[in-house]
Length: 161
Ligand code: PNS
Picture 1 (tube, protein in one colour):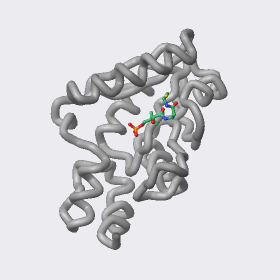
Picture 2: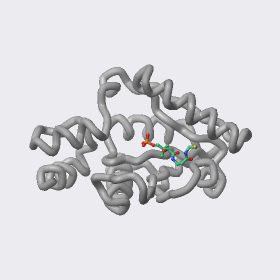
Picture 3: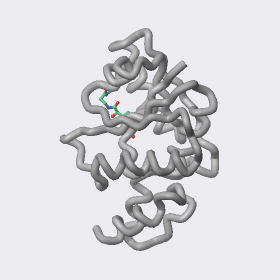
């Protein structure tokens, strides 16, 4: 069974990576969908965001993960990948409120596509890409917040913003 794991990944965090690793153990194949939305301003380019996921997955030896850019509707991307489900992580009650709406919209568009949620490990539940961007922009340490394989590149880029 295959699944899509979509997101902005601006940048990939250890929280994303935890969901990705746990998903990779559950599903035969995971397509990571990196959002390419011209209307959304990202700190990192699409190529950077994709390469962060690729590098981190290589470092972890994840063999069943494929990274793809997507624009347009998530359900169309999932169908193009031939996936049966959408994977998302849940950290907080606020996430739940947003995710319940996203899930309902996607169910309306594609009733056959399930959305599956993995609850974040408590130690990672505080973590977000926005937090990484803020800490990094003030030259704070992002050790333990983003995967080691991409830590230096991200820190360098954020300190120059
Ligand atoms: O990492 P994010 O920013 O929380 O990811 C949000 C994402 C990419 C899952 C969401 O914005 C999305 O699915 N965008 C594609 C457009 C779409 O299908 N929207 C939901 C139905 S209205």
